[in-house]
Amino acid sequence: MSEKGLTTITLKKINRSKVYQYIYRNRQTSKMQIVQDLQMGLSTVSQNLNLLEKEGLIDRNGYFDSTGGRKAQAIQIVADFRISIGIGILKNMFHITAIDLYGNAFYTDTIPLPYSNTEDYYKKLTDKIRGFIAEHHYDEQKILGISIATQGITSPDNSTVIYGNIMNNTGMCLEDFSRHLPYPCHLEHDSKSAAFLELWNHPELDSAVVFLLNRNLGGAIITDHRIHQGSSMHSGTLEHMCMDPDGPLCYCGNHGCLETYCSANSLEQSAGMPVKEFFPLLREKKSPRLTSLWEDYLRHLAFAMRNLNLIVDAPIIISGYLAPYFTEEDINQLLEHINSSSPFPIGKSQILVGTHGQYTPAIGAALFYVDQFIRSV
Ligand SMILES: [Zn+2]
Image (cartoon, rainbow, N blue to C red):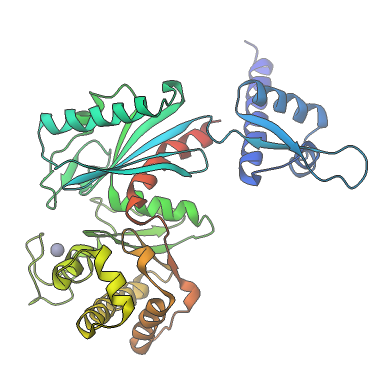
């Protein structure tokens, strides 16, 4: 092939990609808008639209309101052209979700299954995933992959869990899952998956500190629009920040880690009831014991936020299981604690609250394949 031929093909691919990405970003657009904004010739745009439509990547449905003359056709991507499956593994259950190309979780479920690092467990889990796909009649060709979020820090190549003290899953391998699944598979630390979802929802953020308020606490640092991994993959593990060296014993073997004060588990333990019962009772404001417990929780959380904000001067994201329970009053209390002791006060707009609750890691994990796909078109 001549050099010129190669260049033409590359250029065609770039134009196709540009048009698709443009439609994806704008969600709904018209041919003339694309011509204008991408400064591309009308015939080039038409050609690419025909190509993308033929491939099934976009469709033209409906019309924009006309201001005279012919009505413009509305163009959008086909959001379920491909889907991604996310899994969030916990000690006694796992979460499963299916998301479209915009990251919308159109299915979520929690399935009880006690974890054990055995072949029997991996077989059962992957059987349930295959059953889920069959039951919902998801076209196999449509599935980009299965992405698994687990508690525990993974190796830099995401092939193995290298620190898994919570679930006792050190040594868990991607292979344990992938050998049973006829799809591409990916494994990641659940805190990083959650942070990826928050970053996806806030593309404007350059940096952030993510507090993942799950049954076990997690965290992540976002800098330069990316999740900071660190030299040995443990950047952002704020759950083991020491609040009091004489405090309660943490699963990591040390005392007084933030985990022992601010995880959903620690809250349930001190309240003596599940989170689902705790919050409705707390909000009734009839129990001084629960009110004081929650105040204590917020005080510890604010202390960690205050200190981390000095290291990473950026918005703080409250994410995960407990996030949807936070009220405006809670945020105000956090701010009051933070600002009463920090030389650099932070504003209300600097605290963001995630909305996906306990499914955050599973949805975030699934985004791995969506992100890869969108970039590849
Ligand atoms: Zn610890």
